[in-house]
Image (cartoon, rainbow, N blue to C red):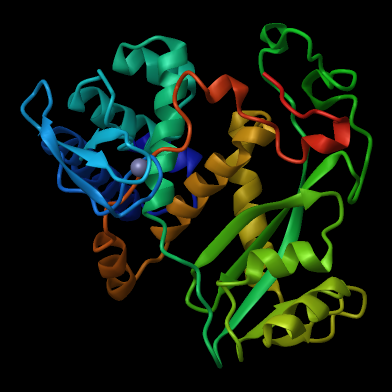
Length: 344
Ligand SMILES: [Zn+2]
């Protein structure tokens, strides 16, 4: 297993991969314990209201509460990431090994003895587990980071025959062969990425085509603090977005090669491309999950003891956003370009 893993994720050393697998298994175990024991919640998982009272016990004798805000009942396991899973803990653990191996869905399904669609659901639910355990990206006063954008083709893959009245808004791109656009285009998706001097990184789906000052500012708020120093390329949107946050800006000129280097963020793009390549085109509406998975892998890359401690001490407060039944009807990001209000 580790040999395959070594080929697919060359950016991690053998020890880092073993550590990542152990951490992911621990995260799953904690999610399953939260689900089965039903620890006391702090807010209602349905509406976020903090006023609730005890309301008897459920079938497996777990405590239930009644929300004072939305009048719905819930237990400690309600909306937990693995709360309603009928799969055994062992199945989730073996699937974690497949995730760390970056195995194909077909191979993962075979190893875990599940069907293909269950394997697909497990992959995405584990991406959510990983996303909840990502360290927050923060660059404080006097610290430095590099930011840049990378562009991927928009991918509308999915089962459009289920969509009823809604049809694919453009001609299908068969295996990407019909795409002959270079640079940014309204039919390509921009991903804003950043990496700090400590090696912390973030990757966020930014917008369709070229990003505006508002797009960049919205994503950098809460990540880059006042007084931080940010290096980027010559794009005019960065200094304006950073000025409104109050952060300093340093430019790198690609044509003359002068200015502050952005080699770390370029290397991050290269690793991201290598990571996404084996999936042969990620649907744009699932892109966020794959970016979270990539950032999780990056956390284990050259992580020092201090960072690892922070990583392990993350609290578990994960709730899922999409149920299995609703996964197929997740809207495509930036669908208004195609006048897609809802798609299946
Ligand atoms: Zn409520």
